[in-house]
Amino acid sequence: MIQVEHLTKRFGLATAVQDVSFEVRKGEILGFLGPNGAGKTTTMRVLAGFFPPSDGRASVAGFDVFEQPLEAKKRVGYMPEQPPLYTEMSVDAFLRFVGRIKGLPADKLEPRLGEVKELCGLHGTGQRLIKHLSKGYKQRVGLAQALIHDPEVLILDEPTVGLDPKQIIEVRELIKRLAGIHTIILSTHILPEVSMTCQRVIIINKGRIVAVDTPENLTSQLRGGERIELEVRGPVDTLPTALGTVPHVKNVLIGAPGPHDGHHTVSVDVDGQHDVRHLIARRVLDSGFELYQLKTQAMTLEEIFLQLTTEEEAA
Amino acid sequence: MRNYVAIVRKELNNLFVSPIAYVVLAVFFAIAGYFFYIILTNIMQRVMEMSMSAQQFGQPPQPVDVPAAVMRNFFGVLSTILLFLIPMITMGILAEEKRRGTIELLLTSPITNTQLILAKFSAVVLFLAIMLVPTILNSVLLYFFSDPAPRLVPFLIGYLGAFLLGGSLLAVGLFISSLTENQIVAAVVTFGVFIILWVLDAMAEPASTVGNEVIRYLSVLNHYEDFSKGIFDTQHLVFYLSFIFLGLFLTSVSLNSPKWRQ
Image (cartoon, rainbow over all chains, first blue to last red; front, side, top):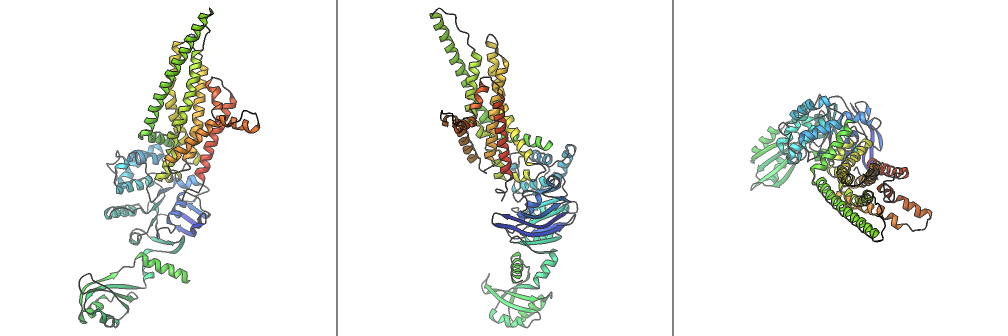
């Protein structure tokens, strides 16, 4: 459905995206993960036809984005990070306008308008001016304008940025519902978002693809082990030796004191996929410590990045 | 075609939801009406004086073509009002789209840049028509109260000239609005460019060298004069149409340029 081959985009001397190739199958949700400035928006803008690539090719639904731009654009719904809204228009007027410029036939406009508003949770807001809507509703209107012409491909640039937690969940649910009907590319810099919504992830950094895989594979591959965090009270200096003999424990790190008087946080690295939490808990208690908390620490995006980028440089 | 119409409608709609359109229209009608009144009374007074002095010398009063004189002066004033008001109409037309990011919506829609520019230009030309058409009432007044009734064609030629001049200025304004994200900057630069176009005529030395002729030719007002006298000359029509074409062409170059899309 979407094909990108050796895409490069330069702005003057700066290279925003370098030699990026990937493919998205019909009905798939692809996550585009990367820190700010990694080249996510640039890649999406090329796909949406906002500017041409400096090198390479991109095609959507079989149409080259720059050789047959009108055909390609008809099949793409694009929501930029900042939703493009004419804020002095009402929701209905705005969505009708977008429907018309996207080439939606006149007889399909009204039914589709109803559908999209229902889908995006915009019922009852039709007559309201966009400028009077809350941030969350504006985001929904942004999503609705991308959907109005029922495009085969949806490109969503950070669709949940700036929303409150409840709205974020709603938008994610909505995206999941759209899967299967539309082929979706969405960008984010939040790792859980990707694992919740996407079937495949591309990690991009400094304009290059560093990894492509399913979210599960990516996390398990990168982890190579677990990190367990403890909160204990007692003479922590003796803890490393006490825990060192527990099977599979690689490393014990004494963290900062607190949050309560005499408490310490301690990180324990475990190799492989072995669950040794019960062994650790017993050893802590047997050694005369008080245990207040024990939890598995999920790998954060920063860690994944650090790992990926340092591997890249070492290679 | 449908998306072209959609953009024209949206543009006009946008103009009329902001106070700018109403302010421009109100100021325009007030000034145009006032000047029409002043011009008419001045000319009538002069005609009276002339016929009185003719009587003193025992000669029959010379017939004076009052409608033509009034319209010539009125079209002159009209051009000056347009010079001041057109920057207000065009300042936001592309600059605002860029500032708000809505240009991203337009450029990722299945419309060509040419369609987009033509739609934007059509919208402001329609707005110009909304300004100019009501002033036809003035000429209707002249039509009913002068004897013999004036010829209609010179009026129409005068209005054609006002449209062409206005259209040229709108095209320049559209281009300048495409260069910036700030509508105030667009308005000021547009106004500055208009003033230069206005005084080009005066900048030329009287000597008839090639340079001076070129400068005189480029002065937008020079070509307007014949129209305001009710004289139709294809040379001027060609000038204005090429001027409009150039403005729209530069807009498309600026819109196609990748420089600003970062």
